[in-house]
Image 1: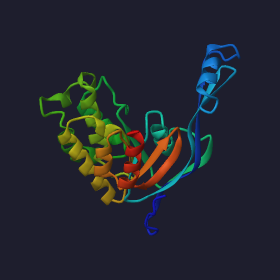
Image 2: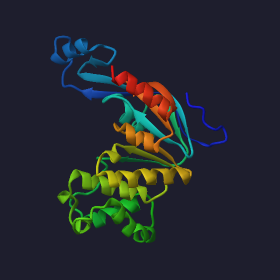
Image 3: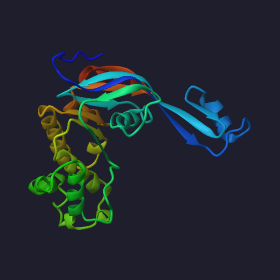
Image 4: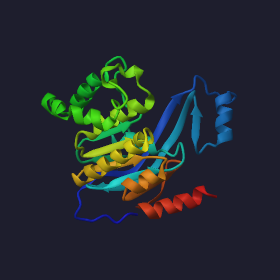
Amino acid sequence: MADPNPSNVPTVICDDVHIVYRVNTGGGGKGSATAALSRIVGRGKAEVNRGVRKVHAVRGVTFTAYRGEAIGLIGSNGSGKSTLLRAVAGLLPTESGKVFTDGQPSLLGVNAALMNDLTGERNVILGGLAMGMSREEVRERYEGIVDFSGINEKGDFISLPMRTYSSGMGARLRFAIAAAKNHDVLLIDEALATGDRKFQIRSEERIRELRKEAGTVFLVSHSNKSIRDTCDRVLWLEKGQLLMDGPTDEVLKAYERETAR
C-alpha cells in the first residue's frame, strides 16, 4: 500500500467496497441460453437467477486518498475502474462496504452530458452553473474555457450546436469546463485520451495545478504516459479487485511486466 503523509487530510475512503450490477436478461431458466453462457463463463463472474444476471464489478476494494494527490487507475478493459469512479462520485450504490468523501466529488468522462442542440457557448454557461459557479464567475472564465479547449482554433465552433462537433472537440470542451473550477475531488475518466498532444499537455498541467490547490484528482487512462506525467500514485484493478496500490513508477512497471507476457 502507498504510505501517504499522515498530516494530509483524507478526501476519499473506500472501505471494503463491493459493487454488483443486476441486468434483466428476459429469461433465466436452467435451460436458457443466458444460463448456459453463465455456466461457461463461470459462476464467479456472473450469476443468472430468474432472468436477472448479477455481475460483481468491484470486489472488496479498500484505499484512502489524500488532499494534493493525483491517483491513476489502471487495468484491462472491464476491470472495474470506471465503475469505482462512479461509486466515489455517488452515482452507483455499493452492494456492501462504504465510500466516504470529504467535499463534493465531480466526475468528468468522455460521455459527460452536454446538450447537443445547444451551442458550445450555451453549454459552457450551463456547465459552469451546474458546477456551482455564479453567472459572474462563468462570465469571467468564459474566454479562458474556450481558449483552453482549442475548439475555436479552426473556426468559430463555439457558436455552433454541439451536434456539429467531433467527439474529440466535445471531450475537450467538457474538460475545459470542468477544469475551470477548483474541485475537492475531480474524477477524470479517459478525458485525456482525446485531442492532440498540445491539448494533452495543457490538461496535464491543469491537473498538476488542481493538486497544488489542495484538490484530489483520480485519472482513468489507458495511456501509461499520461499516468506517469500526472500521477504520483496508482491503483491497479483487475476483475474488480485491487491488485496493487503504490508509487506510480513501481505500480506501472509491475503492470507493464504483466501485460507484456
